[in-house]
Length: 165
Image 1: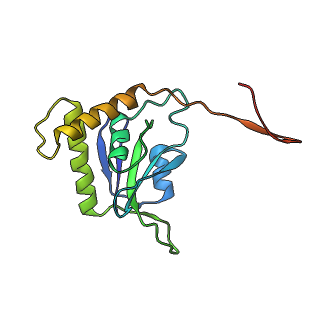
Image 2 (image 1 turned 90 degrees about the vertical axis):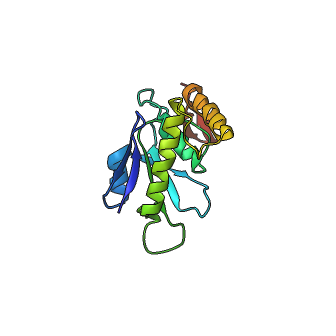
Image 3 (image 1 turned 30 degrees about the vertical axis):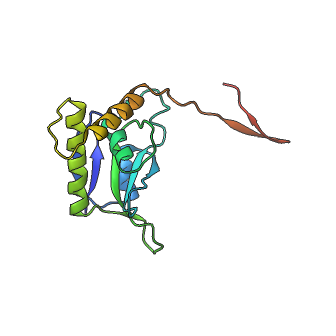
């Protein structure tokens, strides 16, 4: 049983723990699911639900790039990133699954490619010049994208009204 955590400084940690909602919460706090559209849909990401908007939690450059490389949205994420297995088929169990050893190895290789490329090391033979250029562009977006705001609404007699900030 395992999951992967990418901490805010970009280090990857393989955790051999039961893969549950509580385990994920211990790593990222209250979490949001990041849907990953990789082939076969066997992975899922988890991030802090307020990390990007709280103004305190640092952006996770490597974790954001890993989620994007796995088919996640092109946006920055803040705080630790957790990647687990995923089984979207209906069952009596949770969709959250442990990573298989093969997938965990693949994610570790992806992490090495990303961190080497960010460090300016272009010796990774599986990283094409086109991929490195796309990674550099995505990294710049993660570093510089504006922090999103939040709109708060309150119920009124006529429906909903935005609360002035």
